[in-house]
Image (cartoon, rainbow over all chains, first blue to last red):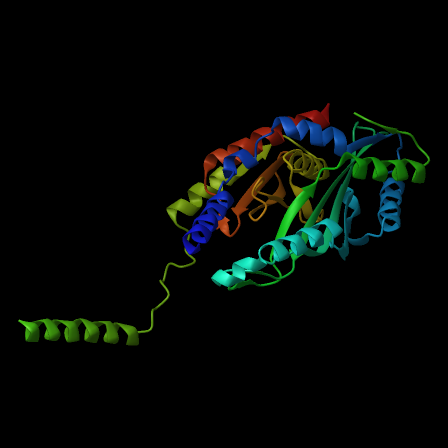
Amino acid sequence: MRGGAALAGLLALTGCTTQTQPTEMFQLTPESAINRAMQIRMFETPNERDLLSASAAVLQDLGFQIEESVREVGFLRATKERSAREYGQDLTRFTVAIGSAPLALFRSGPIVLPVDLHQKIAATLIARPLNPDASRYEVRIMFYRVVWKGDGVIGQTAIAPGAQYMEMLRDPVLYQTFFAKLSKAVFLEAFTL
Amino acid sequence: MTRRFIRAIILIAGALFIQGCVAPQPPQDLLAPTEAQMKIRSVQTRTFDVKDRQLAMRGVIAVLQDLGFIIERANEAMGLVTAARFAEPNYYDVVSVTVTVRPMAEGRMMIRANAIYNNKPIEDPKVYQNFFAALERSLFAIRE
């Protein structure tokens, strides 16, 4: 039983060490074109300041707090913190705990899986002129989040709360929603690339 | 035999003990430039034929975004851009990069990039070559 657990732990560890080489981090991949199309919209406007303040207003409407802004390079960064609790995760946690309860007879259960507790969602936005006389702008936004996990138990080992993981948010609906609101805010049609 | 063995152990323990008492001195050349530093600096730096610093900065930001980096900080006055990305598919590791844009004589820009993998500086020249190749394309695209 214990050997099995050790083996499982070892497998989990090796699963974590699949690394992307740093050299690949600085190369364009087929996915970067897809992400680009999703994250960018064009706006026919000569006024960068209005475009930026409209973007900030939309982010505020979506519940974000603006954390940083640099007008000269058209940059905004905003975050919001929310609960990351999901009904499904709690259900899985309960089922696994009940299912693994008999393992207590072998002093190795029950297993209580940690669930996601808290998350910080962040957005970075860049507005950039597309032509020399700056009459057309593109707006590019990227969403990502950091999630903090709660505590758990596997056998006699407790899992401390606070483990975190990060991920890019690549749900097209998220981006469509943002740009729909933004084009309404600047009273303009947003053009896809 | 055993007595000699014990004596040897005492001697080694004593030597370790004495060593423990000497506070390690920081090396004199801790902050002095080394050969390796000069080399890595030349790998990290490149000059471009761009007159406008703001244009160069926007190009840097655009290329970082294309590469999937999240822009964390930018300072136009000092020509600084800081960005990071997760080492996907491994979401526990972070690659961060700081790029500085400095104007030089004759309307040229000196662009330097420093990349870090978690807490380890990236010294592989290939990484920087890739970055500057992408940047060059991006800067040309803006100017057209």
